[in-house]
Length: 169
Image 1: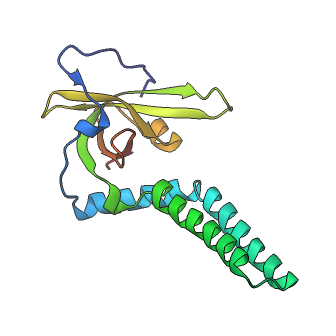
Image 2 (image 1 turned 90 degrees about the horizontal axis):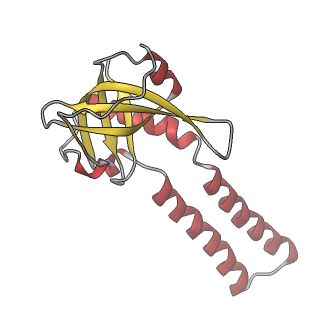
């Protein structure tokens, strides 16, 4: 498919991810989203690993120096609580997927990130049943290169602010 930046379509109104339909997922959609989450979480575990290592190193230093008081226990507990809260906030799960809808691909486009050399890839998804569309649906590079006009896209959002898309084949 020729890589195009989508133009505004008169027939469709632009919506935000929190306007997607809220419904229960089918088994196939659940499998697609869980495979997406595995790929997504692989890159977002650095903060959890850093705080867990800080807690473990704090605990080992206290044991090595023979400090078994409230300060050592509090320091280790704080590091592990921070690691747990980061894992609950940053790493999505299939239970936290609130908005999900299937649409058709209208266009694809990419942007270069200002802070690095990485490119961000986006779908422009149209929902013919509700006559709406979303411009910024995040996708991976492989899905970006394999996308064709009028392919079906599973669009979902965890927080109502950022939408993600996966090709349905």
